[in-house]
Length: 256
Image 1: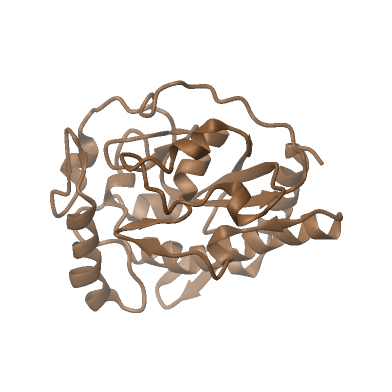
Image 2 (image 1 turned 135 degrees about the horizontal axis):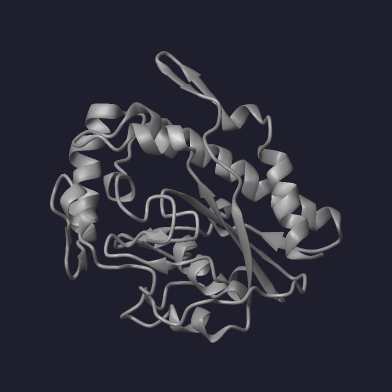
């Protein structure tokens, strides 16, 4: 199997899928996600080991081989939000309803994509696991034992920004997914060397954050998390999200 095959299969799964649409009250979305970017990393890449360092994530972050013994490849993808979702959320202050549906219903659809890729691999005789669908997945101190964004960085999808979003050639406004498999799939080239190579440090995400969680030195995850937990969730439950730092910024839909 080649990376192009998985790209094609995810594209087909997204097309005309009712889970990729929203029709609820005033929110009408023909598409939650546009076509994804798909890349592959080798399990042997030493950057996966680096994630266990305390200054990166921590020792509780599991290696691909700890999720799946015999693992060889990590398929990583970025699902860019549709233009309608991104444009709606460019307004200041509260998150747009379209963004909230994209964040929650969109992630439910993302789980279906994860499972779809797992099914493709198992039907072909391979083994596969999506960490975020596994019962072992958990969050510890605002970090998790598997990071979709870091896996995407290692696979060559993009680099980090001041807001801790990952900037890809299709921008940073969207969702990520990954699948670990024992299939040997040719890895993608990582077209960068620096962790924040695509970020210009323009500061637009600093201005966009409603609770000033972002500064010239990075993002305060605790302030961001408290805002979501204490203000956004009570106001918009059962949905939540913000995404202001990912919209109306130069890296919204491209590399600036």
